[in-house]
Amino acid sequence: VLHLKYRTPSAWAQAALADVRALLVDHAFCEDKAAASARMLMKQHEKLRGPMAALAKEEDGHAQMCRKFLKERGAAAGIKYRNPYVSALRRQGLGLGSGELLDKLLVASLIEARSCERFQLLADATRGGTLGRFYEDLLAAEARHHVLFVDLASDLFGSRPAHKRLGELSALEAEIVRSLPWAPRIH
Ligand SMILES: [Fe+2]
Ligand SMILES: [Fe+2]
Image (cartoon, rainbow, N blue to C red; front, side, top):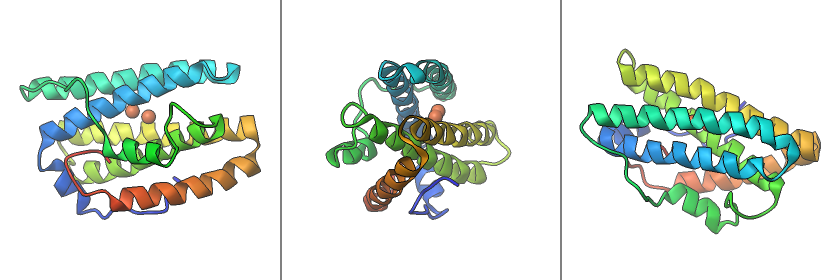
């Protein structure tokens, strides 16, 4: 369903949760980026305006939740941060700021899918607590976002071409995520 070609081992969650504050700082950054990407995509096509405006708002809400959890832990989100996953995608020419619109939508769909997969593992590892519930809510949202991006790509570029390209990009994404060391980060 999520079109992912690499499955993260469940042991990953322990490495990510080893430093919850660092994980939340990274997470807040990812949500900020998701909101910024949606705002950027809004301007790329008339059909994207409505759905991307709604998405940006939702991602802002996720970022606020991360900041709330950080505050409770006496920490704050960082200002600027380099995300190795996004940098690696960009090195493959898959930056959300460049390239073809089809690729941008599909890369966004894969980032949402990967986040969903990771939130599932985090939810399993933190079940019962407030963080567990947070991850539970997020994984449902990100699964929905994954589908939204695939649907928009199919709508604008045709289902067949969109799914063919999604298969190619998904293979690249799998290679990237497999090669990254585990750390207190979402990716
Ligand atoms: Fe989100
Ligand atoms: Fe999302």
